[in-house]
Image 1 (cartoon, rainbow, N blue to C red):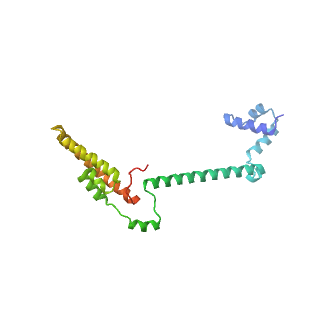
Image 2: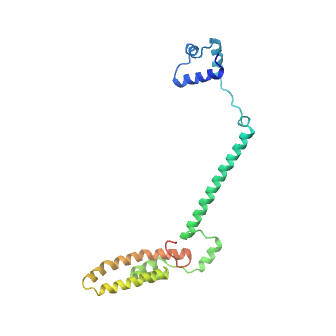
Image 3: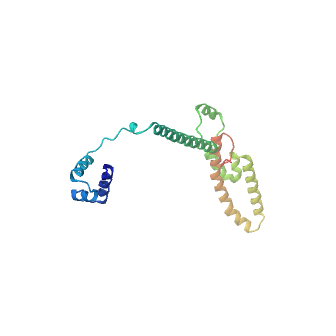
Amino acid sequence: MMTRDEFERVVRAMRAEGVPLSMPNLMVRTELPRHTIQEWLDDLDQPKPPPPAEARKTAAGKGVDAIDSLRENFGALRDRVVKDAATRVVREKLGLDDEPPSDRRSKAKRPQRDLRVAALLGLLGGPIGLLYSAPLLTAGIASAVYVAVVLALVFVPLIGMAALFYLVPLVHLACAALGPAYAWRFNRVGARSALLPS
């Protein structure tokens, strides 16, 4: 004879298949008497109050849940710490870190570079204008190469002068963009530093 659990499984399967839960259908599928089917069907239609979650869990289950919860909290904390540390390192390397109020007072004493002056010097002087705020080695090498190329092109007949008319404006425009960038880095770091830190 079919047990009550098997009966409930058959009823759920019939509902899932879309078969009507009529008495003849149930009698054919379950081979139970009519009064038993009616009684079990009435009990099945009444919602059962779910047992409280605490009553369903054993002591071992509660311990496993506590360990899982601790593991999830630890994982979230680890991810947050790693993300904060990575963000702080990147901001420090780029000079974007927020300074505490004590550093703001010392920032007022630090030398500052004006971005407009840096742009104007880069536009007028080319790489020589980068000496205003760029690292001295970088600006010095760029200036020396610039002067050497200009002097070399001056002595090349016809082609040298044509190349100067095309290259010099491009170099000066590039320096007009690089000058404020170096000035901004100077103001953030408080000293001459590279645009992209190593």
